[in-house]
Length: 174
Ligand SMILES: CC(C)(COP(=O)(O)OP(=O)(O)OC[C@H]1O[C@@H](n2cnc3c(N)ncnc32)[C@H](O)[C@@H]1OP(=O)(O)O)[C@@H](O)C(=O)NCCC(=O)NCCS
Image 1: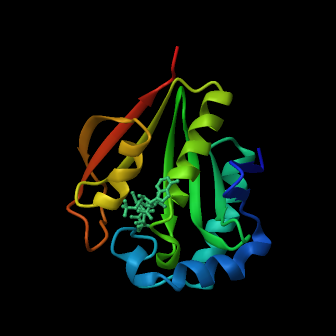
Image 2 (image 1 turned 180 degrees about the vertical axis):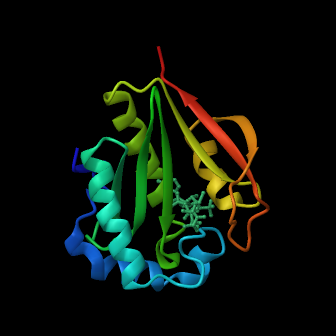
């Protein structure tokens, strides 16, 4: 589905024409994001944005992942999230510009992606984060995921990270 909404936030499939807003949003929070996400460490420029949007289009078409902008009730792009195909499961990733944190937008986005996963027939959904990333850990906890495993992160790791990932899992009900 190109668009998902819960009546408050809307997830909108990233398109190549979103380059300006993507770069502005991610680079505008370069320290907040770069601490935890290696792709944002050192800033987010147009080359990174173009690479992401081109890759996202290909991954969507070949069924590898679905990447969305998270849009606020005022239709402002607040961040991004993605649903990665890990058949028979799915994995959710997310980020928010700093000024849009603390309002539940990413918890809402993840809930929408969980519902989309069940709609697609997935049997489980996972969320992974570095063990020091407490803000990220709060998202799966709020949504009823349970701790599933820990594993070393691949290199390189972002500066605030310990390099150990915690993986949470939610199993399809019924
Ligand atoms: C991880 C990250 C997305 C979490 O952002 P966040 O703002 O804490 O998460 P949410 O948008 O779900 O907001 C939750 C907050 O909104 C509040 N909130 C308000 N309304 C809410 C609602 N309807 N539902 C859930 N929470 C709500 C919650 O109480 C919580 O605030 P609190 O922690 O003060 O209690 C953000 O810290 C981030 O972008 N970090 C950098 C990138 C990153 O680490 N990405 C993840 C890599 S694994």
